Image 1: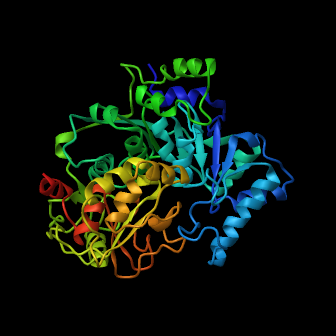
Image 2: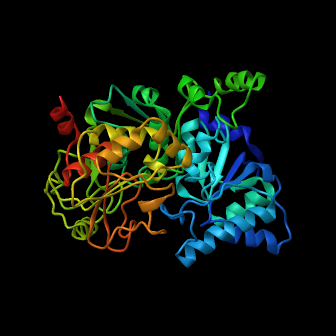
Length: 468
């Protein structure tokens, strides 16, 4: 019996090049402003039109400011990229969700919430975190700019078929442990290269019990283990999330779609190239301490004292600690925090804002912490206000910014200053990722919220105890 990955992949094979790659049909191409300009230029130079323009959706997110979006973008590079995407989409007849439109946001947040990303699809975007859409039961992966052009021109892509891996997490997650902590735990166990060459199917009790928001977070971080992508077999949780969304099938088409989606699962006797299993009881709230997402520890643990990390020379471990200002064997609880960032395609959804609000409710933001709370889309922003979370957050001293990628990466105004320590719900903590010289600790919304109200790295479970 084939794996689910095999099923979806095989259904999209147009032809197999002898001793070469597979020509794979692509159901959905997402384009943002950073990786698409050269692809459009290439199409223009060859006098080509997009083969199936109705399958392509464009929106700016990386360069969009998260304040004063009704005013011209001040940064000239950002303005050029955002304006260029709008012009290209218009010229090539593509759907474009521009800034301030109700449909705009981070492309990996908007796709699922509009019902554009559906089970059984192949989905690509010129962005590594395209793996997010795998939570819908789709084969989704990031591609390069030349490949974006290839899909525009032919609605196909040439790809070597990855190997298959199944990661099962069984048991029940403890209090204060989220999907983000599960992902950070897996990265620490596998390292940032442990899944290289594989497409990962997540399974087990923990995964089945995750909300769609949690699944999107888990799949988002697949690339940080080196995986080509990660996905979860669709189930009743998936169907309930999709039903009624703008681009979801309707009426009889819905019934037919669900009947098909229910077949999208790996057989009991499916053979994977690699299988791994983990116990939920071993996972506590997590934080990173270094300069790659795999350098992580449980929040109550100490930085490893052995002076190295897996598959990496000792000097790289020490270089990372020197950059962060930490030492081997050090515990990070109580470490002063300068910035807190809630958002990104990893944790910018409604569930993440609910979690953050649950910690800060009835408390006040620490005076010396600067906090940026950035919804992943205008739809998330609207839901925050419908649920009254904006009032809870504002009462605690927090302001909600406008949607965009924000402080996930230093491509817009939201940059962490050099030497400042940020607790961030985003996906990468590389040197300078959030700004030149900035230091980033990756964490869940609960850990970020605890840091925001205490001013130091704090176990969110301790704050919950105080509330009782």
